[in-house]
Image (cartoon, rainbow, N blue to C red; front, side):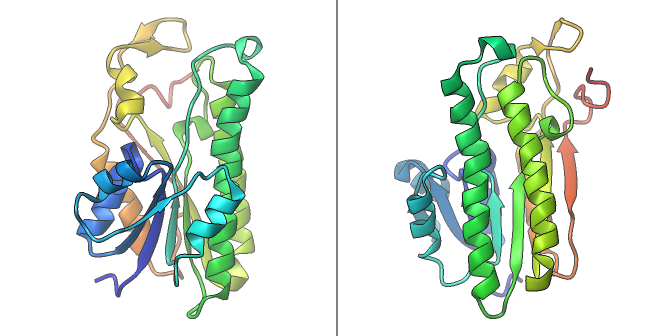
Length: 242
């Protein structure tokens, strides 16, 4: 039983966000879906009772307005993120860097900030923030400077939230995901560059396993925390990357 707990999921219109939202809806949670496209959020809900919040995580006013519609928030799944085309750093445009950093870093910060403020003030006090990191928060893929930098920044945010949240009963954790099969990961099944210069097909996993892992983290009592969880397709080149 969830006792009527509420989760807000960013980037809920597709991919990991969509799969996670459906898992929480099936488990009986109150679910708020946040994303830029209202029609995509409605498709995620698929007729289920969910709060649809059309908002851009990069926009402080959008974020604050979305969170203001929640009377209570027990969990934030800070999930929204994008990547950039693979290239060495000298080939990456300023526009590409800003697009990634504005979503993956600033967007994460703005949503965590809004959630922390709400969780600190509500009664009963507290809540949980789960950030979507990546295997790239540990090791890079070739030509991934903007994305890898952004995911290392997410790790710093998670650690700080975990420390600063203690006096207010706010737990913070991070899920680092490797090769969950979404639209963003289809390329893994066709072949992607490896550290040795070769192109290789990589194993993938069903995205529902990620959703189940987030549901487990979110369902723990606030006296318990999973600071970092790595979930990946078993045979992907992670341990041996580089």
